[in-house]
Image (spheres, rainbow, N blue to C red):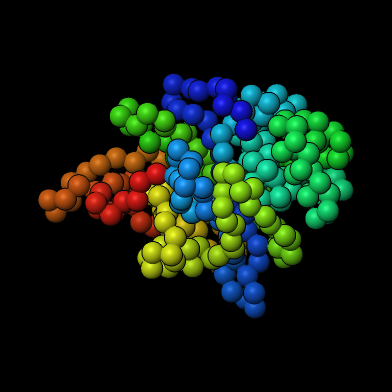
Length: 260
């Protein structure tokens, strides 16, 4: 919401969240994805997870509610909570009296005020960062890319998922629930488009049969920066990542990569 966010030498700080809900009749869990507006500079028209840039206000709230977390990490988690409310209408990572009606009203106030702190105060909510689990951190160290995002990924769980979601229609045009494999299948058929990091994360998430399983995996694997690089395989350039980040697929031919 604010284009004056701090930019580190390592890129623009950003955060995104994989929101789970239970699948039906023992099916794999579903994940919330959004189609970004084609007018967006980054990943326009692509299917992504909710999230966005970290704002200055997020650092202030991170310092207030981060507990033992360092301020930078807490700010990224606050950003995920704020962006999710703004983009989808879901109130995640918060404690207090929360229901669909109050979440809808809080989203309207956030869009009206453009700042999160007064919304928290008005609705009597407190950030509960224990509801978020760090999952990954992607930063393409490519100096030729003019706008490089240093993006942290988190996991969150809605359980039954009996909630309404609604796209904000400015940054996003459509919200939908799908399994990780369902999103990969849709991409293979051309129904949606996914950029390289999203595809790799969907492949990783498709390994899990529940949120608890995904969270246990994330907690057992320390988050380290994933920085894609190009290497030659069988005479063709491939875009690749390291094989020690927990991803079952670590590369694809550069010609096949969908760019943001």
